[in-house]
Image (tube, rainbow, N blue to C red):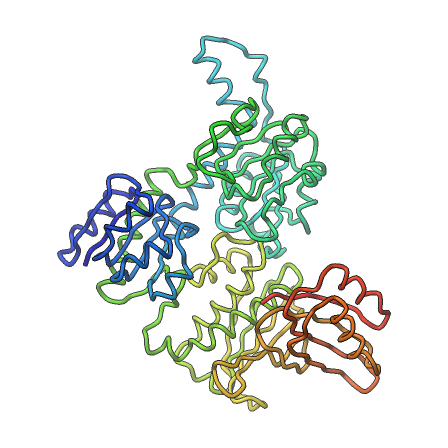
Length: 533
């Protein structure tokens, strides 16, 4: 079996491949562009990459024997996972290898931006001696705001507390109990960080919610003289807005390891600002991290090719083929239930309880389904970077979320069903249940907010509470028509005649802000929400 190592990894990782007689190992001397790589792939069974080589759909189409892509690192941004899944190619990563090294770089950046170490060094090597120009500030007694409390954010927090910093933490999924255990003060939104922090460090993935979140509006809310550190993802910061904040003095300094465009363009404004410290994406660049990632990627690929063992896969549950076929329909249903709840649930959920009923309770394993539920749920927050079915349980644990599973033979209306309940501080905050209508290809949400419903898990949902009065359905239909929104299906439920009703519309497009505003003007309608599947 041919293993192609496209990017530099630890020699120990390469040696693990070379020690096995089953493998033919090719190590590329330099990173190749797509058109240079494609001619080399005809007989390749496995590819090993870091962040440089792009494994695109075209690359995979040129490798008919390709079975697995191993990423020596966490993020798989450079791998077309959807295309890999469609072609039956397993994508594996090494999620634990760079936690400590990125946390340590973050802290090095904090100290450097506080004491202006790189700038002072540059003047010394230029033959100068200018102590007054480089007066810094102490960390001890200051307030550090941590945006994102996953693995890396938690490790940064430990080091910050040891240096005498007060730590404020913002993470939609971090519970009060977990925050207390970490020794941090939990704030309800990012504004709580902006108002009080002397230093702000970012440890969030790039999502719709986090992309560009540190922008002009955010900088305006911050304390004068705040200092920013980003070793997570460049896209989280609106770079032009940060340049303006630095030039105005609102932000006293920034230490950046990641950028919207990498490599950073030679003429980028950051390069001209003396108060900015720049490093070329060094978060995982230590001997120890590279050795861990190199060894781990070799082990997971070898295990898969030689025995079929699945570890650290981002697109396949770790189960055998026969079991996978049995649980496969539930994976989609579970992920959609999780996604629904992730978009509707309040912050600080601390317990998730999953019940498998009817035929579902007889499945040989429920773990991949629970992981799919967690993945759907956590994907809608800014808690943990690169969520996948491998790391969702540890991600939930790091956020203080307890995950419980129960198999139930309690007789109900449906032959097979999943029911997911979310709790906060001992109180149930929301629940949803699903099943299949007729066949595994026809999943439905059949219970939401303890109300019976029938919701296809596709498209866009408009959910609302309304008084049970004549004409409400016609009103909604007319309003959707006014805004050129097609209704695919509708589900209605009520507690009693003339009481309170719960209405769900499946729509072909997302309602505009104007449409939602008009709906909310009706005094009989409340709690209007939109969910995207």
